[in-house]
Length: 386
Image (tube, rainbow, N blue to C red; front, side, top):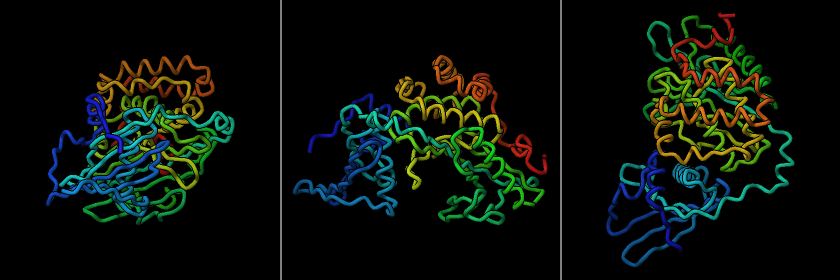
């Protein structure tokens, strides 16, 4: 097996994205036996998993089929894919281990040659790009400020349903989630989101409950604004465009409490394949705070799905920018985001979304933060605010 290597710059970049590396955890083999895992990644998908057991008599490799029902396997595969992605590769190998605290440690990586984009013929088939979303929100009692259990009002299925969260090791369906049918254009999807909100309003009749969105409007409950894309291949180039032109700029519009979500969620490059054949981009917080913001986010996603090959994403190689993203440092991010906007505004495909995006980008660049403590039904004109 070829040696797995990782330079100092790679270690710093991984650390900026929240990875633990072998340099930080010297590690002791228990009883002279140490176990690690080697994950082979191809086009941002785990292709093989090896268990490596080393001891006094050398290293024994045992190939294991990836078990998608195994929490450990899913964690290892997800972190291997993202570690390679962070270092600029869609494929290669990552060697990982689990430390005594249960954390995944990156011991080394071996990058494949420059990631090969899908064949040119694939681009010709990208004519039926669909965009979807499943943004979350939380129900809060106006008087006490306590969260209400969404499953009291909403079933687990349907275009307005309840979603799971782990509380003290127990899975509970406390969050509410909108699941509109996907659409070819952002405006149509926003209309379907409003329709899903109305369905939720018919089910949630308690007048004392506020509907809150954002990143973490109630301490301890992180909310996601996952965007779904289908009809376009999942590849590093597209995910980097989403990170650079959607996730980084969106920080400028956040409330002060939004950044608390990034302690565990909101990591760049967070994607997950879906049964519908596409994938979901899981990095953004819940952008339901206003219809204008929702339209801007979805319009950016639609634009990027069609034009990601033509955009420069080298901003993701800047450690200062990456650190500012995770810290929610708007002042440091502003110059980089201003340059990203200048690139977009000159792109010939931008005109197709100009009216949708101009208001959105104006809000971002003015750093007008949303208010996570305000009931978003008011801006959407959802009962009782209609």
